[in-house]
Length: 253
Image (spheres, rainbow, N blue to C red):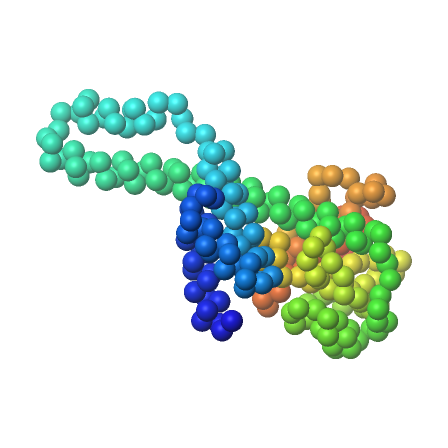
């Protein structure tokens, strides 16, 4: 399938996702998706998941009781001409849409927080339970080149505190998505750095540096915390065993 054919199928998928499941056109597109292979099936499932999340977000918006009746009653209560009512209705409609938009944005922000929490928990679990590396090296370029062979993206070590020493790394996964791991130490403290693609986890492309302490306690009952951020088109999660361990390298915060 050529890139142009793939793009055409993606557009058809976007339209079909809005149709009822029993619609003949949607069934036809689903047949084309199966024929196209894994890439189309994965994008289709992600598309359906995003649509369902948006529908759930809209359902969570609490519209004040009687808002619609109050808005519609205003023209009758205010003595204005019929022509003026047309002029009046536009700002009222805009205000209502603004309230709805703000509600959706707030819900999306909450959703982003939940996703960051999930990434943090996955990173902490990996940090605590898997400690080996496939390459032992303190040189960034050697680790980057080694891990790039199996990663589906360019491996780039971010600028970290100079007191952190690189020990090596490995290719691994967080959930069902491939990431790269590198081990860093400072004195007797260990840090785990994960590089990943934001879109794999439904996260925005730009994330300001943010410390996440998951709501669920870790298995070892440590107060693990995770610094998550994006830099140069890449996303990173740095895990430390204690919040104060991040404070010791606070010049990267």
